[in-house]
Image (cartoon, rainbow, N blue to C red):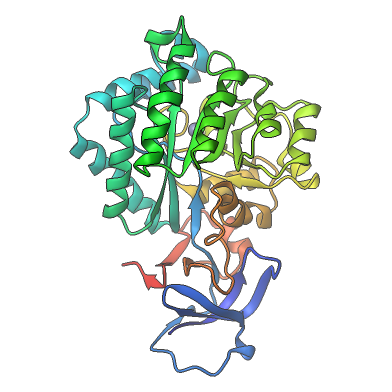
Length: 397
Ligand SMILES: [Zn+2]
């Protein structure tokens, strides 16, 4: 039994909210008990960690990344800062396609080496579960290769890697005139093989102008659903399109971006349980702000996650705590909602009820912050926010 004592503030991400002067008991990688120190059951811990009055919170969850890639898109970054649009850049062969070319050309070892380095940095900043999407292959062989590499990555890092298939990240250039043929390949060849080999938990898709339209997106996600994969979608990043209709058709766990929302879209979100993944770095890199405030969505009972969306085009940053600080300072999140966005809500976006909360029975993924309180955690940007990370009950070095 591991005891964590002298917790100044315990942010549980459950209905229990914040508990002052708290303690946690961990047994066999799971949380056995948590609550006020004065109510600690009589135990004989084999190990004790003194949190010294600090803030303790669930291990952070980055529920949206594209971190397995090669190449740089610095030139594109410069072009965007000179006001060229994402779609203009994509049409001239840049954007996702330039990363696809670099990734297909890169060796397995170089892809894994950079992914391991990025995941290591994320783990040190408190991230204990990371979703990783394929989608820089865009052919059967290349997508399968990336999913196998993501599986291998999971064996090389001390945190959970949550694999997502995103063969429908863009319509490959060779299928531009007949995208249905690519949708056929995804549904007929890729998805059954991925399900059979257990290479992904979820299936994601880019449903927006110039990418997959609503009927194509429904076809792909319905096939994925039939095969037992969890569902999510990139929607309304470029336009107030039809993407939100997906959650009327199918049980999506989450949608991402959703920067352009009509009143009807908001009503759809309100009527369903899909989490909205808010991606502040994409807002900055693409210079597009959400049209409906986070506060307004939260007031309507819509659950928001906050993710890095780490990728070489629209978010060359994997600092999840920074994303949450931007959600607070720039996008109207309350401090509590921003923390829920990194923990419980991010877990729901991945349909992972075992992580993201500090509650008996949950996996013992825990962050001991440098700060003594939630306010300090968001206020002080000058120091590493994390003191110690515990994954499945084991303190990471
Ligand atoms: Zn994305």
